[in-house]
Length: 320
Image (tube, rainbow, N blue to C red; front, side, top):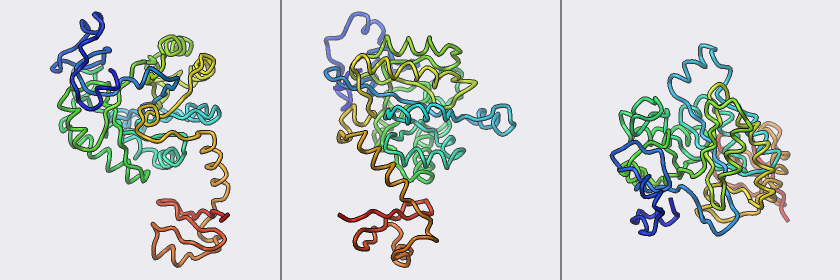
């Protein structure tokens, strides 16, 4: 969907015949053809060279039960994050609240990394419209959004402003509901097809061939057995898209929702700051003041200590 749809305006009259024929009524299951009469971001501006890689961290009650029984080893494909970090590729991660609560340390680390933008994927990946790839129907749409916000904020300290509905199955009323809660609905125009796909080459070829300026690419973070080859495909996708002249960005930057930053410089600052982390017990500074005002910056020339919320550390930031 064009960027102009973001404010809930009517679709432009000039749409392709194929797109118009593919348009789905709002009463039907939505799997997002290019024009579907549902207000969301399917892509960013086509005039530049920015593209956004996005990853959904699915978690249903059934998936959690499999994990607890030991039927699966993990629902976190850390290799995806390793590839993104090694290649310095920013990405937007849509976390279900259930995933964040299952992997709280990892969720916090991802939210703290300036490479990544955190979005909501609702609480437990229930479908807002059915049928939707066999997903259970959400019984309370508002609760799904609210509980995801509550859990993700409690775990990471970050309150998402973006949401992707499970399966991309939803209607106009759901868009209005999300907007009332301060959330922008994010879809995508490139489906990587990494779900249940054993071929990394097939996934990579699909993304490489379909990506264009402004594309939002939809992939998954939960790994095998539901998305087994995402990381392997990424190792082909990233260099190929760079060779085509594309630059990677978070969804926020792609859509102009956040100021553009020098991503390489931001990552370097983070790595340098990360090396300066010290435990409270070893810190030399105004710790009594920190304990009295845990959310504040406590200055101590020639620099200051920064209390990292929800982590047992203070960060020394040298003065100039």
